[in-house]
Image (cartoon, rainbow, N blue to C red; front, side, top):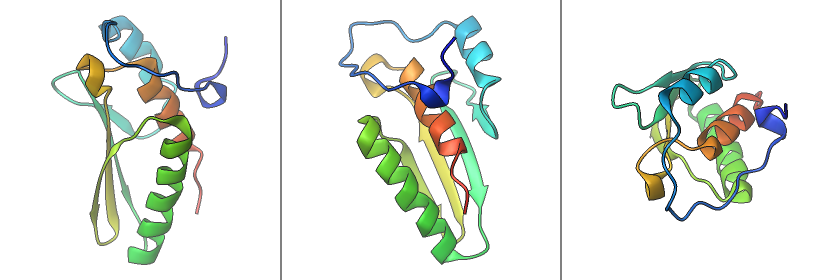
Amino acid sequence: MLKLKEAQCVSCEGGVEPLAKSAVTRLMTELTGWMLLKDGRSIEKNVEFKNFDKAMDFVNLVADLAEFAGHHPDIDIRYNKVKLVLSTHAIGGLSQNDFILASKIDTITL
């Protein structure tokens, strides 16, 4: 089986169902520090850094990954704290793309 961090996001314009709960549960085990939100339609990761500069370095690396993948998280920055939320808006829930991008974000080290 291809590891998530080695996979590529594929375009999703809707017309498919969000991942089943069993698939989401299995894919969550491949991520570090992500939480499934109560609505079951998105995942979230909160990261804290030493200072604003490090938080922005992280956000810029996330932005580069997201742009390359064509799959973009919601990003909230509060000085040295960053909150990322991933969901596939076109289908109103989670797709494999969310987990692929999350796994790539997990590889960022500063």
